[in-house]
Length: 262
Image (cartoon, rainbow, N blue to C red):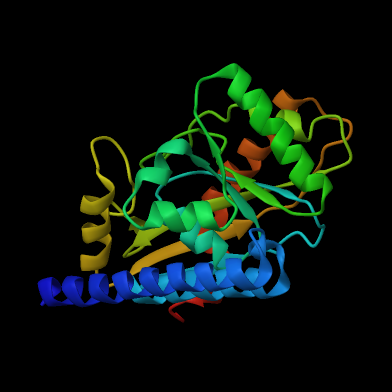
């Protein structure tokens, strides 16, 4: 049964990705290369992500309120490539992704086409340049989401938050909203959701598609005003809020969001 379920879902996903690429081509022709900045583009991207969640049976629950401030820097703990799809289905933002995402089958081309920012980790001059690009994007009133751990974890713990990219907002008039992500199965951390170690994208995609349902909780914590803060302090505060939210999530009331309705 699970084999049939996997094949059906993957077939639907491939069709959905193909339709998305065609939609991008139409949008570029109609609205120009920055089509994703238009109201139509923003709405189309969210609808695409919500549909992808439904195809993969990702059930999303949210806690808290999304920052209403234009040009917010969202920061989240990182567990899987699913993080991007689930977050993009509930918030309007551009994402910062690893440069190797560009090479993923079909998904890479789609990610690049919606205005994502890319980074090669571990190179200071690159981090400095990307931080400047993030700052420019925020100053134009567009939000950006980053994963300060710089890699994925097993979902049970949170890695150290690197402060380099927080240079984009330190000692400046901006808001940072930490977002806590947790994947559950039968009330416990989901062992299938983390995309870590020797996992390949395709193998992990097959694993997710074979599951009956994947539950993720997204907790929006209070925004941090960054004007008086250095980048290390912002990173530490964001990490502390996410750790606290993940510890409280199981007992907090939640509301159904995109994906499957609980």
